[in-house]
Length: 126
Image 1: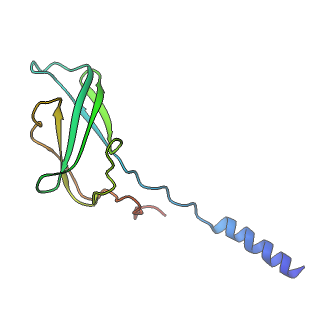
Image 2 (image 1 turned 120 degrees about the horizontal axis):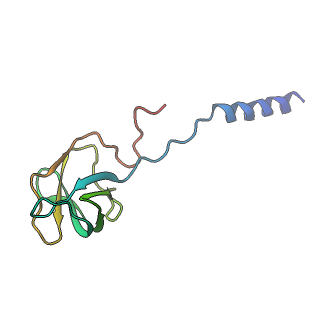
């Protein structure tokens, strides 16, 4: 009887003390932008956009996709089409955006260091 009670207590304590597994960190980056035409009027419709991440030199990541733009605004999850998994996301990057076959818009957007790498646990989680 004592062994059964000890085993039951160990199972109960294990269930109470077990912390839930941390969720995998996101492998995408949310990016929102505003698109206007040559007359600075908001664009509405489907537009092909090319996004590129740079780390000091040439592009280290590229993703091209059709994006729905409403009243000039759009939102995308970068990494949804072309995986960001091979990048060291704990580094600083700049993001370039090009519309259709137009040259990339300047200046590029600065993305700071400190993004989590896939599989890395946030120091803020308990």
